[in-house]
Each structure stands twice: as C-alpha cells, then as structure tokens.
Length: 117
Image 1 (tube, helix red, strand yellow):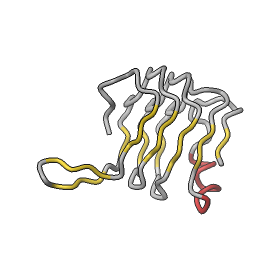
Image 2 (cartoon, helix red, strand yellow):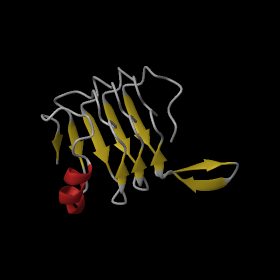
Image 3 (cartoon, rainbow, N blue to C red):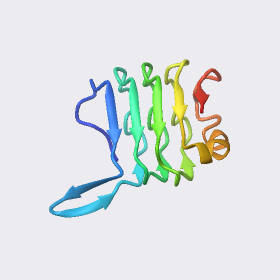
C-alpha cells in the first residue's frame, strides 16, 4: 500500500488483498511515508496480511486517534512510523499478539500516552 489519492480522507481501510486485471494480490506492506501528513485522517483499519509498516508511514497524522491492526503477521514497524499521531490515540491489536505488538510498536515516534490494547 503506497498511499491514497485523497489526503482529506478521515477514515481508511487498508485491505487484506485487492484485485487487478482479474488477479487477486495480497497487500503485505504499508510503504514508507504512505500516509504522512494526512492531517484529516482519524481512523485506519490495517488488513490481516500486513507484515511491514514502513518508516514514517503515519507521520504527522495529528488527528489519527484509532489504528485497528487486524494482522497477526506484523514483523516490522519502521522508525517514526507513528510520529505525530494524536496523543490520545488507541492502537487496537489482535488479543493473542498484544504482548508482542506492544514491544514491536514501542518507540516509533508516538507520544507515551498512546495506548496499545
């Protein structure tokens, strides 16, 4: 996933897969800076096949208050991926991955008040 054409979006779902010319493709990564400076964005749902969130993927999304990660495959989160998101943001993760994802998502630029649950 490399970004959205409309930077005024308030809600976004990054799909698990997409179809192109009749073929289905898994969406496994959120590119570096993919949604950087999408200041109107309030919530994001991250699909179940995402393994990587790139550097500064959500940087400066100051109104982003909810990130719902559906993937249990997440292995890498780039530097400053969450830099500048709303300080009251909540990152919801699959229950069986809570401990692992709390570590994986720590120190990615977000305020200490951002909660992972």
